[in-house]
Amino acid sequence: MCGIVGYVGDKNASCVILDSLRRLEYRGYDSAGMAIDGADGIEIYKEVGKVADLAKLVEGKNPNAKRGIGHTRWATHGGVTLLNAHPHSDRNGQFALVHNGIIENYMDIKEQLQREGVAFKSETDTEVIVHLLSNYYDEMKDMVEAMVKLQETLSGSYALAVIRKGDDRKIYCVRRGSPLVLGLGEGETFCASDVPAFLPYTRSVVYLEEGEIAELRPDGVTVWNSKGELVSKDVHTVEWDVTMAEKAGHSHYMHKEIHEQGMVLRTTLKGRISDGRVDLSKDLNWTQEDAQRWKKVHIIACGTSYYAALVAERVFERWTDLDIRVDIASEYRYRNLRCDPETLAIFVSQSGETADTIAAQRKARAEGAHCMAITNVRGSTLAREVHSILLLKAGPEIGVAATKTFTGQVAALFLSALYLGRLRGSMTADEEARLVNEFLQIPYKVENVLEKENEVIKLAQKYHDRQDFLFIGRGISFPVALEGALKLKEISYIHAEAYAAGEMKHGPIALLDEKVPVMAIIPRDMMYEKTLSNVLEAKARKAPVIGVCTEGDEHASKYMDDYVEVPWTDEEFSPFLTVIPLQLFAFHVAKILGKEIDQPRNLAKSVTVE
Image (tube, rainbow, N blue to C red; front, side, top):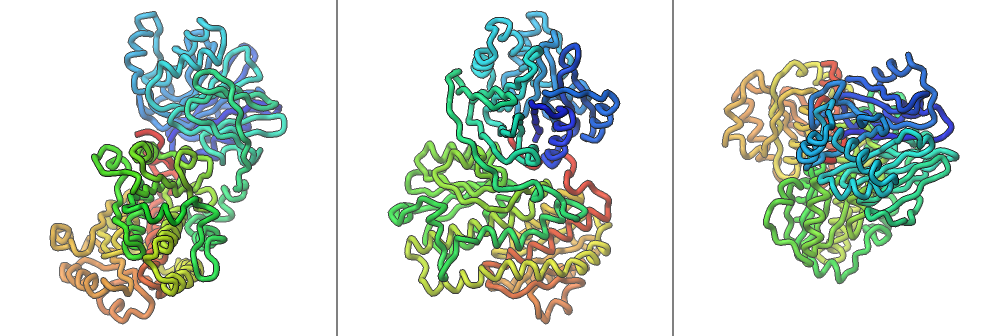
């Protein structure tokens, strides 16, 4: 969702802010703006549209400030208008402020401020914050005390970056429920919603905890807790570098990230497999007693992460003797489910900042569950709150539509299931060794599938003008169908449904005719014959069938109009291979249609509000 950046140092602040905002464009937005120091006070520049539009506006003014804050807005309260774009200022021009999140009690505060004579220019909840802060500062004459009182008044989620007229070498920040990270450079300091914003300048970061207030200066930061008490903060070094967040010759970030999946699998497996067994003891603080105590596993996630969890559900059922349930975070947090010290609760989130997933984790932890995070961001809110964490090691994913992190999440979940199976004694050493040896071959088989991209391009050229698609699969291939349909919807805006193939006769078959292609995920597995019968049902209704099948499948050319073959693997590992043609198909359909692939409309990379 909305992106925040801030800079104080000796460089041209407007240039740094524009550069940093470009690196946050993947989060999704509809307007952009910045506030910087000017000759007569704080100057605000904002535009509806892209960061490039803001850059044109700023270029004409040629500002050369040394401090400023910037923002990309994804509309929540109020429409996409110039007045609603951030930054917002108070009536005296004393403060400028940018905000990510939602203030739940903003209407009550707004009505009170209006009774006091404050005139509002926008429809946003954010403008309420800046007027309130201005009042508190006028009363207290101290920024930290004013921000402590601000937190006591506001309900909801927020990350704020604030500049005050006269404090020309300081930026103030606070976060509660929305992400904010600080960057420490040589004679300069940054704040941002996500690390890639300032990666070209520094890899030294400080993660703010809930309610913490920070003062940024060129020589460093000072941090207070929500009560205004000084706290000491650790400085972390980010493992990513700036080249990992660039396109590297690809036309789009999504295309680059699809092609990185072999590498992601290698890095996720590296150091976690040896001598035919999985060893996660360097990552997880689990003991054999812990594993024996747990009786059930809850896996909770949203979106693509949820589909990764559904894939993993099948192997947890096979490789462990535990009761397994998978749920959508936004549903789980409101259900009356039994969650206790006998529960291992696994929370899957690429960013570690998904609001519903974090809230679900807090619910499970409060009820006594052992909470584990599978995430791509070590310093994220989710990673800091759980009992144990398993990192993906996927590097930054910039494309809004997840691809390589889906693969990384499935791999991390599979490793967890194998490790748990061994700790509980529900898997023999020979079976573990057999599975691990095949797991190590999967990165190479993924790259084999990627070499078939030209075949997928031809399919995209043939079918890009269709308005509806039906994706089907059985067993472990059903969640792959869900993920394939989601990818096509996300970036091409074509309507796509996914069903368990066995449900065809329970409704979806009514949709089929020669205009509705069926994408069948049909590897050679225990459900193959059943899925093939569903393919024949589709063919009988004259629907074109596109198959994703195993190399050497003699039925593919007989019963399917088109198909892409993937190498053979154990059926548990087939999702790593069968998802690749679906990702490539969605990408190339969207490319042919001229869609904005890396930043699809109405979507954001990290959903940090409910």
